[in-house]
Image (tube, rainbow, N blue to C red):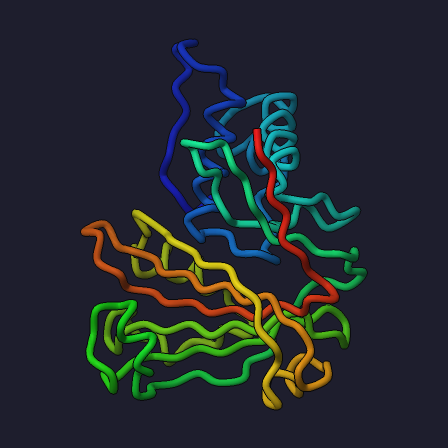
Length: 245
C-alpha cells in the first residue's frame, strides 16, 4: 500500500468495510489507475493484520462495485476509477469489452516540457503557453493498443519528473511515495469523439473511428487543480456502464 491509513480494531465498524474504504479511495483518487493491480489478499493481510476472509470480503465489494476484476495468476486489476455519486446513488465506470490475455504495458509517446495548451491551462487556472510537463502514453496488451492518455502538470510541480521513465515506473506510486503528492478531489468528464489521424495511428484503428473520451482534473490538499489527464479509449474495446440504485 502507498497510504498510511490504519484500521480501527475497536469493533465500531467492520474491518472489511474499513479496508474496502481505503482501497476504494485509492482507486477513485488515482493512486491506482485503470490497468494497475491492487495489493493481493496476502499483501493486505500482512499490511493490515487482518484475516483472509476480511481481505477477500473487501475485494469482493470492490469487484461488485465494478472497480476491479480478478485475473487468473495475475491478481486484481483496476478496471474503473469513477466514484459513486452519493446523492442519487449513481455509479458509472469504464469497462473492458474483452478480457486481455497479456499483462498491460505502457508505451511512451512523449515525455518532456511543452507549452501548455489553452484548454489545459483553463482547467488548471493557468495561462496558455505556461511551461508544463507533458506525458503521453499508450496502454497496450500484447501487440494491441487499447487507450491513449496525456497528462499535464505545471513545470516544477512534480520534482524530477522529466528524469523518470514512466513506461516502466508507476507515475502514481512516484507521486505518492517519492513526492508525497496526494489528491483531495478528482473530477471527471466523459464524452465521445472520433479518432484523428494521429490517434488512429497510435491506437491501431481507422481515422474517424469512435472513441470514448475522458478528462480528469485532480486537486491537491489545498483544493488547487494540479493535474490534467485526457484519455481516449477504443470504443470497440471499452464501454461506459451506469447503474442506478
